[in-house]
Amino acid sequence: MQSLFTAASGLSSQQKRLDTLASNIANVSTPGYKSTRVDFKDSLYSTMDNPVLDNDVENNLLGGCGVNLDATNIDFRQGIGMDTGIPLDFFIEGDGFFQVQKENGEVLYTRSGSFKTAAIDDVSYLVTAQGYFVLDDGGNRIMMPESNTEFSISDKGSISTLDGEYGTIGLFRFSNPGGLMPSGDTCYSETAASGASENDGNSVIVQGKLENSNVDLAQELTLLIRSQRAYSLASRALTTSDDMMGLANNMH
Image (cartoon, rainbow, N blue to C red; front, side, top):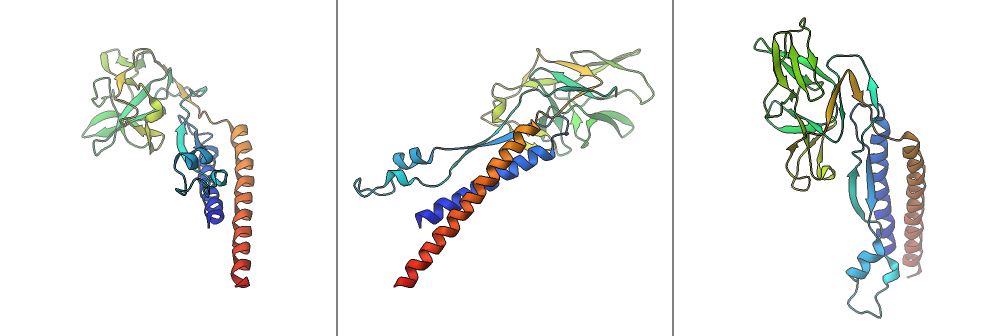
């Protein structure tokens, strides 16, 4: 049974890795997308730490215990900036995040600066492509000038027109961004592992640019081939183990 479990755990783990690679490849052109990788644990170490049997003589430590998933890690390295010339496209130079709010009040964070305006009760607000409100450095929704009014944005996110300042796009940072939890649409939610968000005074905003995905397509395709081969080997091991057990049963 151990051989069946080992092969099955290999299939399950490689399927998770294939799904992650497929998501990375599918989002290679998505602004603000961050690539994800799947890491595995050392199976032999896990077995030595928690032996299968209490009898040290009979316990086969070299047998291992299959493939163990360690973690799914997000690579938050900055992507390359892409000029768009669109006034409501923003690129963050640095480690900061935009803070956005869903209609239900949930606060999320994103690196994607593809924004637009939306009118609610005759008031124009800055929102994301998904309709989430973009928040200022105090956690408030940002009101925008009317669509035909010219405006400019400073490198610190201050929105201004000839009539004065409208607000400031907030930039936030985390002590451990790797602890953020993906929430879909290139957004993330803070966790105990990431720590609480803090105002980021080091990052700057560039208007008329977007951050490209940081997915390395060549690397992803290479890992995809390796994972497909590993999946094939695990499938063959499962079939072989099943055949051997079938032969053993027929001998009785």
